[in-house]
Image 1 (cartoon, one colour):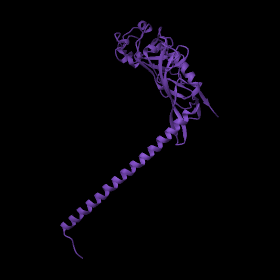
Image 2 (cartoon, rainbow, N blue to C red):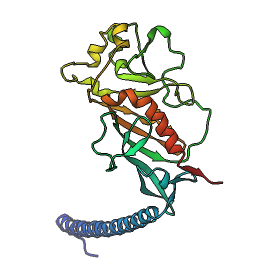
Image 3 (cartoon, rainbow, N blue to C red):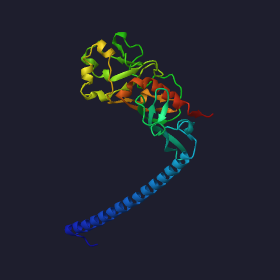
Image 4 (cartoon, helix red, strand yellow):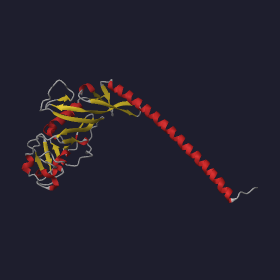
Length: 284
């Protein structure tokens, strides 16, 4: 039996390693392209299914949502109902309701309604975007409720110019501890299921508001009387009702508004919740 020298072993090993490395690289390249083709094919199927689902939802007056309920689109013509979701790759469901709308003080009007020109100055513009699903009644505490219902009276400020809204402070005013909470308005008479309040967050007041400079830092220096008589006038900085503060029988979502719309917001939000709930049909 012939014996190979050390150099021959090294030379043979290098050839073997290069061949093995070449084969491995080829395997990786081929595998990559195969996976790319598989992903592309899967995405093509997914988008085709999504498009088919979207067309199906568009043709229906009553669209199914997660949990077994339906939303009657004819009862909420001001809003877009769609954004298809394929549950378990079978059920075609609508998972979103959204749109801009005008609040006249008594009813909701579509943002694209051309029947009234010019738009009356008393109308207020809002935006809503909600996720659709069948809500179940429960007595469990709200997972985001952080303020108990019995807030100390001496820390509550009732706003004379904004009926239905209060400020729940951290300390008797004026006090620097109130800098964060003076931008958060509590809606009275419409608490969540566990008694915690629904909130309107006007984070636009973080920045100086026009010449008034009504930032949270300045508002925290206001006395109780000054806070009670607070009036933002026509300032238009943004406010938001977050997901945990707006819900209805068919889901929950976010409502966006401007500071100039804050006065009408409590009544509008309650109306909107009832309005959307009437469009939800539960079938047994």
